[in-house]
Amino acid sequence: MGERVARRDVAVITGGGPGVMEAANKGAALAGGKSVGLGIELPHEQGINEWVNLGMTFRYFFVRKTMFMKYSQGIIVCPGGFGTLDETFEALTLVQTHKVARIPIALYDTAYWQGLLDWINGTVRDRGLISPLDPSRVTITDDVDEAVAVATSQIG
Image (cartoon, helix red, strand yellow):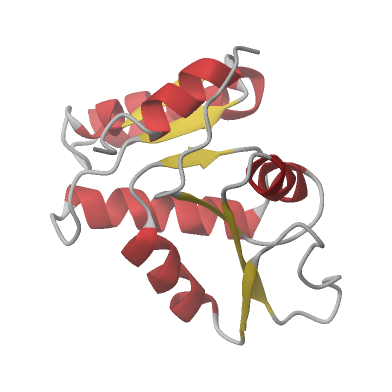
C-alpha cells in the first residue's frame, strides 16, 4: 500500500464495529485524524471499537444511514451482509435521485461484488429498471489505494 497523508479536516466514519471497520478507525486514529463510529443497537453487536474518537450509537438504521449520508463525501464499501447492502443501495438511490450530491463510491473486493454488479448491469439494466448511467456510479476495485483515491476524489 502506498503512503497516505493524514488530513486534519476530514474524518473516517465507520459503523464502529470490529474487523475492517476497526482497522479503518485505528488507521485514522494512529494517523492523528478523526475517527468516527456510528454504531447500531443490536442484540449481538459488541459495541463501538476502541479506536473511535467520536462514537454514537443509534437505535434505528434509518437514523444511522442519515448520519452516514449527511457527513460522507466519499464511500468505500467492503464485503458485508444485509446491513452493508442496505446502506450501499441507500447511498446509490440518494445519488441516483439527486437527493444528495454525487458521492464517489468504491466497492472493495471484486470477487465479492462482481456477481451483484453483473446482475445489475444485466438483468436490472436490461429490463429498463435503471438508467444505463447508474452502474457507473460505483467503482469496483481490489486496490486499496484506488479505493481511497475514488472515495477522496471530491474532497477539496
